[in-house]
Length: 241
Image 1 (tube, helix red, strand yellow):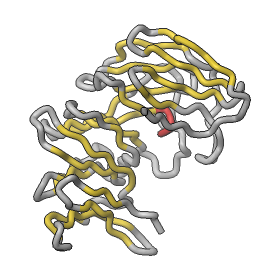
Image 2 (cartoon, rainbow, N blue to C red):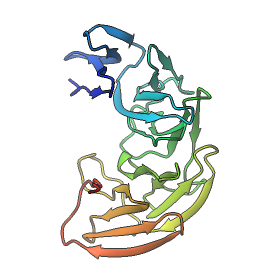
Image 3 (tube, one colour):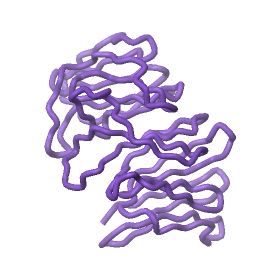
Image 4 (cartoon, rainbow, N blue to C red):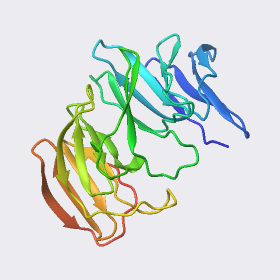
């Protein structure tokens, strides 16, 4: 069974995923009276969510599915159709003021955790583009290697150790920064491997093999500082204040 998702809005509404012990297939928005305002079952394998404000000021939720994500507007859900029969997006990365959501993308249900394509979903244009974030280079990433820059950039950390900065509107690689040594894709998602997060205009990349964390100026295109934390880090989160 999936753990499920619940996200509260400032106006008192609640987004919840739908499922049972056997399967999960959608989500709904509940009003403050407990009644469904919008509901969909067009989201098999629902997983991952993000909330953001578009350039037009609309507040949206987006959730990943096995065949293309779902965007929840205030009173209805919009389905994005993946270009493949199985086209899973399970993790979503947005930023306020950008219409584009970055998602991981998997077209082979039997493949492991290593991925070679990303999804760029434009909520306003209602389009989904599948992009090779490595420009043909022999590399992969996991969901731990995706993030958004403060200017909306799509950031992808590959197994070749490079952090690539992409234009979210075109998928074009703007710059690439070598951050960590090349690493092998693990078989299990729980295994430590390099992870990425963004905080206060800098990207932070862990290197479990060396026990280091690297601070990357992804706009300037260089590793600004590295620190030895002395432990094999697994995941990372950034907190302000």
